[in-house]
Length: 238
Length: 146
Image (cartoon, rainbow over all chains, first blue to last red; front, side):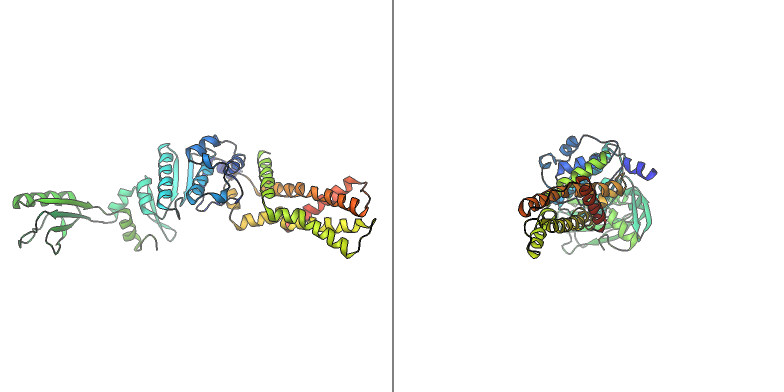
C-alpha cells in the first residue's frame, strides 16, 4: 500500500520508455493521467515540452528526442516533487540531448528533487548539485562536482602563448609548478600546478620583467571526467 | 475505476488500430466458418455445426492472438515496464485487456449466427443468455492462455 502511495507521488523517466506504436501522444497522456490521484493539465505540459503540435501523432512516428520528451511529460504528469531520471539523454543526437538538458535545468529551478543517472560526465557536471560516482555497484565518491574534482588530486594546466619565440634562457621554477614545458616553436609554455592562481601570478611577473608580449593564456582545470578516471582507473564509456 | 476505464478505452482503440488483431478476431473465424461449411458440405439446415466451429475458432483466436497476445507483445517490447512505475497493480491491466477482448469478439458471434442463419438456414438461438455466457467463459478461458 505504501509502495502505491509512493509511486503516486514520484515521477520516473526510464532509460528506454516504450509505448505502443499506435498510441497517440494525447491518448498516452490521458491514459497515464488516469492512473494517478493528482495530475497537472496535460495540454500545458505538452506545450511546455514542445509536443503540442504532435499531440495527434502516433508514438511510432515520433523522433528519439520527441519520444524522450514524452517520457519526461509522463514522468511529470502527477506533478512529482521527486523525479528519477534514468539516463534521459542516452542515445539521442546532440540537439535532442541539449533540449533534454534544458528541461532538466528548468525542473531544477522549480526546486524539485531530481535523481539523475548518467554516463555523460559533462551532463552531471552541469546539471547536478551533488554527484555520486558509482563503480561496480559501489559509491566511491560523493559531493559537489567541485569537491570531487578537488578530492581527485587533479592538477590544473596553465598554458601561455607568447607573441614571439622565447630566447635560449631557461624557464624559472615558478611557485607550485610541478612540471614546466616549452613547445618546439618555443612560443607555448605549459605549466602543471596544484595552485594555478599562485603560479600564474609568478608567470605574469616573469613575463613582465622579461618584456615578453603575451598572445594568449588558458587554464585547464581537472574536469569531473578526469576525477572519475583517476578515482576508478577507467574511462566513463568503458 | 478511472484506471480500469482508461485502460479499457486504450485497449479498444489500440486493438481496432492493429490489423493483425482485427484479422484474428474477425476474418479468422469467418475463414474457418466457410472452410468447415465446405468440408462438411453444409446444406440448408446444417449451418449450426459450421457456425459452432467458426465461433469456437474465433474464441481461440481472440484469446490466443487478441488481447492476450497484445499483453505478451507489450511485455516483450518493455511497454509494461512503464506501468510498473505507476501506482496501479497488474489487475486493472489484465481486466481491461480481457474486457476489451470480450467486447471486441461479440460482433463476430452475431455475424456468424447471421451468416449461418441466412446462408445455411440455421435456426436463431433461443437462449441468448446461455450463448453469451458460453462465449464469455470461452473468451475468459482462452485469454490467460494467450
